[in-house]
Image 1 (spheres, rainbow, N blue to C red):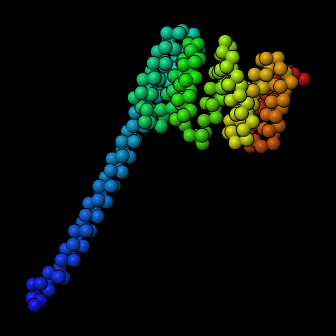
Image 2: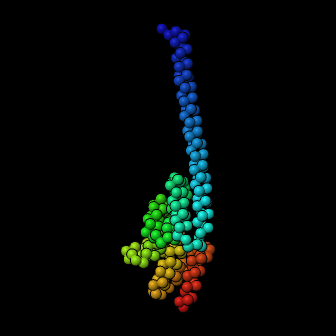
Image 3: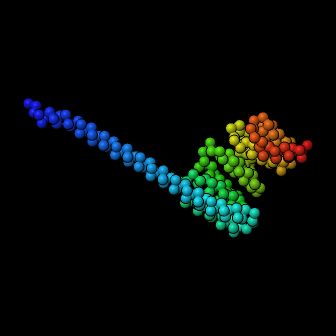
Length: 224
């Protein structure tokens, strides 16, 4: 027999359960929002710390940019290496490696610099606006290893692919240096071919004059 109490409970129980469900949902939602806010604060703090360290390293880098003291470049190398280790998870992390690699090049340590560029490029998306620039830089580092024919061969292959990749946003840079490679090896026909392609491409497709196309035009005038 249904009593008033049972009837009341049958009405209240679902409402109480629903209330608990809503309260649980609110608690979960607040927890998620709180986590997101905390994460955002953490990310902002992380990026600010990385930017501060990067600025300090850059200051040291530019101080000796025109110098030629190996021990100073060693200090710059160590500064960027430490900065990278401290801020591996920051968006600036790959750029610590880029400047560390440059400091190694200044010390004539190309193989170590190339290894760092490998790490840098593996950490960057191919869609990054700077990916092709750094890929070109790595190819040029390999070409600079005059006593390593295998590295030079790979570097030339990489530079050629970059120069003729229609999707490369730094195609003008790669084309100029490919032409310069031929020019420096007395292959003037090869240099003329690459530089002519660069100047024609710039006239046809570029919205703004490319400094590399302008340099190529100057070199072509020397070859005329």
